[in-house]
Image (tube, rainbow, N blue to C red; front, side):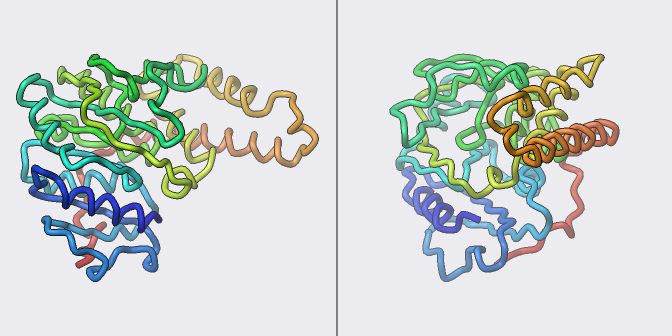
Amino acid sequence: MRKESLLNVISDLAKQSLKPKQVFIIDASPDNLQINKADVSAGINLNFLKFGFTPNASKQRNLAIREVRTPWILFLDDDVSFDADLIEIYTRLAESLGVDGISGLVKLPKYEKYYSVKKTGDRLRNVRGVNYQGADKIIDTHVICTANFFVRTEAVKAVGGFDEQILGTIDDVDFALRLRKKGFRIIHHPLPEVLHFQKSSGARSFGNQWALANLFYFQYRHFEDPKKKSLLINTLWHFCRPSRDWSSPVLVVDRAKNIINAHHEAIQRIQQGPKNLCIRENECTSHF
């Protein structure tokens, strides 16, 4: 649901000094917000797929991964901007460093740099690790950002791509953590950079229950606590503890219900197990 931003990304790709051989756009927007052929004048190999199901960034990326015919994949968000040498920088670094994945610098408009080094989130999420998305140094990491991530295609396919049980938040950290566990080397590097506008639509519009279900699932998949209820209680306390919100009890009760529902949903996903590149072809149709 970010048509104008997406058109700007396509324009930035068309200006690259080293042209991408394939570009995939898998759009789950309503029909009136889908890009049509008349909108695009880029001289690059664009592949548009209309995703006609409930938005799921992991599944959408997996649809494109199936069709990739190049040795490297660059993942970008639809609300970023970047200079004309982004792909050239990534390619040069990949050749010289011998790594399997590079997570580039992610900058926000409000700040010169996005938190140089920080813990990702609070005690509910501290299992994710240290976030180096804005760090001015090279460091091994699994906390990557798919707004700006370059990775070997063979590595992506070796771990089955993205886990479709995680619908669009923390999916990138889960993905990189599985790459690291498989023996692939992932680094943060400050040279390839994007400006990330963090538009309010897209995944951020789905709300707390949706995001927490992803976080609960991630926690239990990689860092399972024998007492799963402890994270649920922690989360309830974090979002529902005594505060001025108690002046609106309906709000607090709704918030608690959302957290409990998110927890139940995550447990169901754990019982079902992870899902990856095994995708039925009829889940996506060619757009043009």
